Length: 426
Image (cartoon, rainbow, N blue to C red; front, side):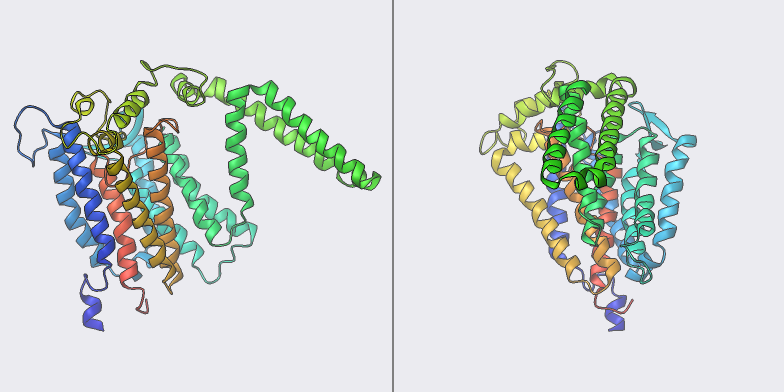
């Protein structure tokens, strides 16, 4: 048993590794298609996007070996340390980071840039798993819930300051983990309500939303008063006034924030999404071209390297956040469906393996991994097909970039190591 434990490949779930390899390999083919030029360049070259990505993939192999070298106990014992170091890496950006596209999100190392926010997700998942798996931790206590919220929102807040709203909203994925571990569903319902009220305020305006909500609340309150008599009114009138006050402050605050603090291109994206504005040549150009590119692929696609819109570079930055549009054009409905099914299969496998863990730390980390991957896939694909605003979230294992690939590789293979040791006494 000891000898088997010292073998870094013992107990590995090779089915999960196979899915990972297929996604990465197919992702590289689409990056190659999106960035191929007429000039003949070597595959392993920093002069092309596909060459750099292939180098990133090759470097992911020793990274995987390093992750597997440490046993599961290491990740549980040093989860807090890794989390703190990752926060320091975010703070360091404000001193040593490089500004790209208006955001200070990168460290520049010559030909390679690293985006620490891609790595912090894994270490935040470790920290959340460490906190919730503590035997002395009672998640039903409000003060303990606040501890979990603080761990999640500190990195999200630091990322927002860069500013990088797309990477920051990923941390809402951890609420699925908290709910799975006993957090009341009311928090998620509250979050959904806030999002709906935010969108309604943009769509209808502050005045109409306030009038509509106050009218609905008044009608229901009047009905309840009629049904309950004077006792209801004497006992609950302050709750009704409190609801009025909270909703009024939130709606007015939303209107002020949207009109005065949001930048114009952010407002444009929301208004295009909600149908208030149409701008296929300006801020909505990427989404419009992406939708056209995907729809042009039909059922079976045009074939590898035969997508005229992809080869014509009609979708800006198609090799990064819009890589799904390459799949849609060249591989068609069959290709996009296959990719989605592969992601669903990966998620199912992760959740299945997590549920078999006798160690609570490994189980919670698995839920964190599944939640982050699910959030990334849903938001990225929703963005590319025009159902969600453009927020700059990469498609896991597909989008170009070493930070994205390595970040998801670390996230996945830490779980694979935890799963391989689930039958051992940590």
